[in-house]
Image 1 (cartoon, rainbow, N blue to C red):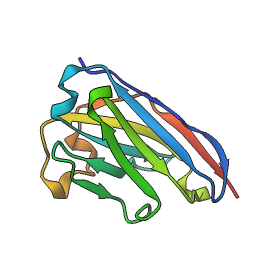
Image 2 (tube, rainbow, N blue to C red):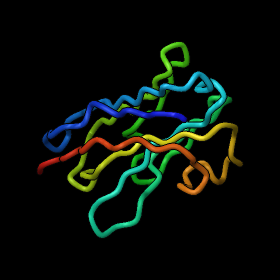
Image 3 (tube, one colour):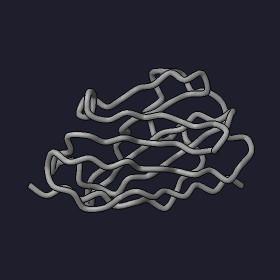
Image 4 (cartoon, rainbow, N blue to C red):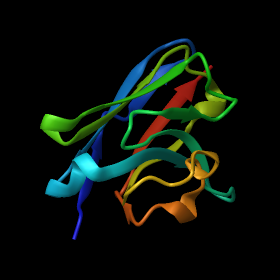
Length: 126
């Protein structure tokens, strides 16, 4: 069983930055594709950023140029650097992983991911 633990959420003003972290407990981390999703009450879960086992990345159009996903394999840790935050970025952010590499066009689809963290709240005020 893979356990994912997110941290780094908080409250920030518009234009500010936050860095989210996700630590994976499972040794298969190096063979897992990873992603960040977000969700607000009453809305569907949205894929924000993803990185596959080969290091390829994909981003939602709404965050391109502002968010950067990265991974530190020796530390089993996934990061999401969020800059120039906007109020519409306010959401619960979830880390997700799956063993293997989904087709690139599906990297931001939640059904491709098997394991999920509990989430960390990000709130951006105007």
